[in-house]
Structures are given as structure tokens and as C-alpha cells.
Image 1 (cartoon, helix red, strand yellow):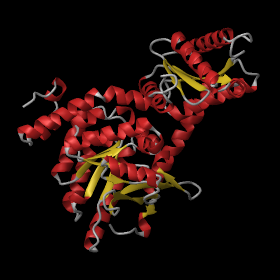
Image 2 (cartoon, rainbow, N blue to C red):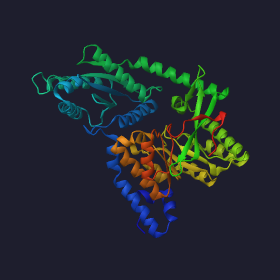
Image 3 (cartoon, helix red, strand yellow):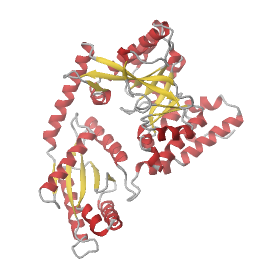
Image 4 (tube, one colour):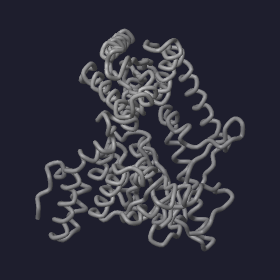
Length: 470
């Protein structure tokens, strides 16, 4: 037998899986894991970087920003985000051609790389827009860097240059130390500041007023928390079901339950609009218990009616390390009539799992009851690669960010193929999310993905109105 890598020797989940195999299969699986880890860096770069400049892309930058904003909100500290827009790039492309326009983009990317600190993170967000994340930077430091960059770009592209004069407009948003801010809000505010700089005449810097916005964000978070509490108390939560189809047969194999909350105007709000507030306020466990209770009731009702279904239930990473949530699930399974084998718990990554040992024990108990465990949004930044090594699971759900544009994106295609190879090597099944057209469906089928979901394959339906049998 091949000896496992050092990192695997202390990994009970991998050891248990390998121990069940005969020596030949064990060597094959170990080889697949080795190859997957060797290609991880290349895949990460393809998935997370802009091909023209080599800088991080919007998706990766957003993940980094989210981590830093969350860290400063919890532990203190500060930081800043800078949005940089090239003034008049369209004019350069129109006058001189896209090749010189691309050269301008590359040269400004080089200036950013050379001028920022090694701890700063630089990204290209879109055609003419860049961003810089500056951890542990105050307002004065961010403004100074912005001015240095503005001056250097202006000096580097005088009217006599090949491209002609080129300038940048810079917007800055600081953050840190206060709950309520989100990466999305910080990025949007920096973008507003940048447009303010453009509106003031271009080739200048604008600072967003963070104190005012932080106050608004805190009030929004408090308001959302109050609405969640009210929804739990007055039965204003509901569930929708979205079909998950077999790519081999085209039939519906199972359904995912999607949480909804009734808003102040009677509209149904998707979970994404309030889950983050629920996690910050400590209410996510209560929401997860509510969903689990309804899911098991639905399973039992369908079983009794003679039309059994299989359901996917989302669990936050916070709940995965809360023993009270596990005890609740065990009690409901013991006391109810639901078939555990028809219940799959999806580990969502809205909140990071910090205690893998507890989370692995949680997943172990679910599988001992006969439930399945799925890793949701797998592949996003390859952060969840360690999930495969630490948490027992049955299904990998491929992050929809790699599926949505897959027919038009070579990096996404390579990433999906790699995830399928890893899953096959481990003997696990795969589900692709956010499938939006026939081309994507056919490619997923060719790659060997087992199941898929998305509006193209079936839209969510209110569970209270019933849904098609599998």
C-alpha cells in the first residue's frame, strides 16, 4: 500500500474511507488524491485570476474582502478598499485599437503591483476597473496610496506618450471594528466614491464617509434580525422546493428545500437576504432547526401518502459545530416517521467552519442515522478542499459560479472536470448548481456529473402548494 501523505495520517475521514478498499483500489484512490492536490494550485490560478493581467479576478477579490471585513468586525482592526477606474479607456480603444488598450491595462496593473504593500491584494474587477484591498490601513494611509497611484499613472502617460495622456479616478472606503458591514456594501461604497471622483472632474480621489454608512448598515442588520425573530414567532417562514435531476435519465431524483421569509410588504425574501444577519446575531441555529423540523414532517407525510421523495436540507457551518442542533435532529429522527435515508444535509459555507473536529463528529452522527451529507458550493476558491479530508460526505455540489458560464469559460471547464475526477476517485456523487441552458447540461453530462439543478431544469415551487413526485 502507498503510504498516505503526512496531512492524511491525521485525517480519520480519509483513513476510514481508504481502509475499506482493497490494496489495488486504495493505491488508485491515493494516486487520484495526490494528482488532485498537485493540480490544485494551477486550477486555483485559472479560476481566480484575470488572464490579461494575472491579477486576482472579481470572484477571488470578493472572497478575500469578505474574509477581512468579517475578521475586523469580530476581532477589531481596520482596513480599506480602493476602486480604481481608468479614465477614458473606451476612447483609447476607439482611437488606437484594443491592443494598445490592453497594453494600457497591463501597464496600470504593473504600477499597482509595484506600489502596493506585499500584504495588499490587487484585482482587476472588469475591463477598466481595478481594486486594492489594504488590510490594517487607516484613512490617511489609504489616501496617501491613492494619491501616489494617481500621480504615478498621470506621470507615466503624458500627452506625448504612445497612448497619450491617461489618468485614473480613485474611490476609497474604510472599514473595521463595527458589526453590520458586509463585503458587498464596502465594495459598493468604494465604487460610489470612485464615481464621485469621476463626476468631480476625473484624475482625483474621493473618500466615502464610512461612519455614516456603518451606522446605516448597523441599523439594517438590527432591522433584519428583528424581522427574523418576528418571522419565527408569527410563522412567516416558508419553504420552496427545487428539483434536482439525474443527468443520465433526466428524471427528478430529489429536491432541495429553499428557505423564504415574508417581508414587510408581503414579498417572499430568499435566504441569501437574511442568512448573514442570522449568523451574526446567533439566530441561524433556530432557523436551521425550523427547516429541519419541517423537512422531516414533509418526508413522513409523503412516505405515508405512498409518494416518497428525497430532500436536501441546508445547514449553516455555525450549526455544524453546535451540539444542540445535532441533538435536535437526532431527537426528531428518533421520534418521527421520516426515513433518514431520504434526507441529505448540505453543509453550506455562508459561515466558515473553524472547528473541523466537532463538525466531522456532527456529520458522522448524521451518517450513522442513515442520512447523507453533501458539501455545498464546492470549488469556490478551493477553500473547501480541506472539507474532503476532514468531513465525511456522500455528495459534492459544484459551486454554481463554475457552472453558470462553463460553456464559454475554459477555466470553469477544467475546474468542473477536476472536481468530477476527485469525486469519482473517492466514490462520491456530484451535483451541479445554477444550470441555465442545454449546452451546459450536455457538457455536464459528458464530464460525468451525476445530477444538476437550476432554473433551466426546474424552478423553485412553494412547498405548501405541492410539487411533482419524483
